[in-house]
Image 1: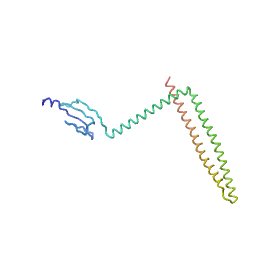
Image 2: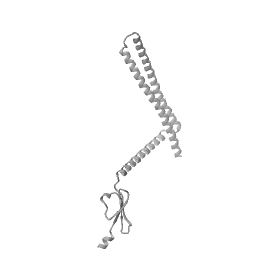
Image 3: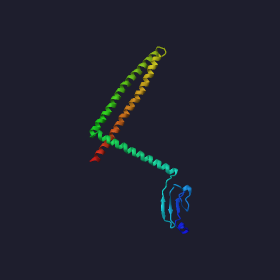
Image 4: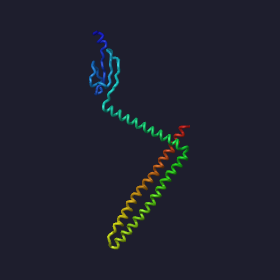
Amino acid sequence: MLVYGSAMAVTYRWVDENGKVQYGDVMPPAQAGRGHSELDKHGRVIKQIKRSRLTADELEHQQALTAREAEEKRKQEVLYRRDKALLATYTSEEEIELARKRAIELENLNIRGLQTRLDASAAKLAAANTLLRQAQAAGGKAPSGHLQMRDEAQGELTQISELLRQRNQAIKDIQLRFDEDVKRFIELKASMR
C-alpha cells in the first residue's frame, strides 16, 4: 500500500499572486479557483485545472471587453438595418438626390415662415421703440404697455433667431446624411455585382 500511495503522489504547480511558479504537495486554499497543474512523480502534467476565478483587474478587463464587443455588435446591427433600409428605399442615386432636394425644400419652407415671423417681430419692436421715444419726447413716463410690447418683440426675435439657426443647421445635417447615403448606396450596389 505504501508503494502504491507513493506512486500515486501528486505534486501541484501554480502561479502565485506575484507571478512566480510554485510547487507543493498540497494546494494552498488561497489558490483555489486560480488554476493549477497536477504533476506525476516524473514531473509530467497529468491534469490541467483551468482558472475559474478572476482577479478584480481581470474581471474589470473582461467586463470592458464584453461591453466593447456588445457595442460593436450593436453598431453592426444598426449598419445592417440602415443598409437594408437604404436598398429597400432607393433604386438609384437619382432617387436619393430627389429625396435630398425634397428634405431641403421642406426646411427652406420652414425658414421662409420663420423669416416672415422675424420680420413681423422686428416691425413690432420698431413700433414699440417709436412709441417709447414719443412718450419720452413728450416728457412723460413710458407706458407699461409699450415696455411690454418691446420686451415681447425682443423675446420673439431671440426665439425666432434660434429657430432659424436650428433650421440652417438641419439643412447642413441633411446634406451630410444624404452624402453618406449616396456613398454607402454606391458601395452596396458595387458589392452586389
